[in-house]
Length: 274
Image 1: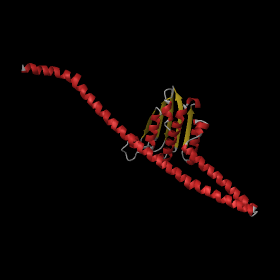
Image 2: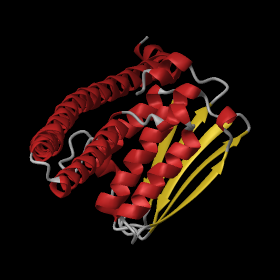
Image 3: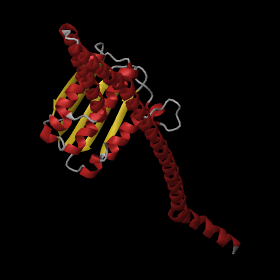
């Protein structure tokens, strides 16, 4: 009986292991992996949320500082110059009155430029007025002017009609962040931004020949070297129903590619990506 029992176990156990125990172990292992990935995702989301709140406060402080430090003194200067012009009028000093009026006009011009810069940083109105392509051209032109050592090439193989309105601000912000990183960290001498439509999909590509970086260090939530720019960029693209890949390594430059299936992009998700 014992021999028959052992023989039966030897014959039956592999079948039981293959069709019952092994699938159970695999299911448990997959569940553990899924739980681990979920925890990592929750950590990334919490970290990104905290960083976004911090960035928002930093931006508000910068705007407040800009209003106080740049526009405040100019408005005060206008007040004093208008008073000086009035005194010159009462004193019948035409030369002094003309000088004060010219200073007033110059201060108004400087004040208008400050307001334009702040407004542009808050919301690129050019997208609504002229379209995404002119807005991107303006953005790239500003980089060329501020950083003449970096050559920026552009290629727009799309028309405004090819671009869903909700995605325009998303694309603009991605390019803005990528160019900001290029000027701050990459030490690049050449960059290229292209936007094209192919088989119902929209491809945005930003390349540079800079020093590159370790992508995992920048995106990993626990890394001391990680920042908010790249994770926020990826979150912005993903939230707009797109996919983004970042290809970079030390010494080999950086390539960022974002792809959207524009025939299937949910408008509500893209609109809230701003």
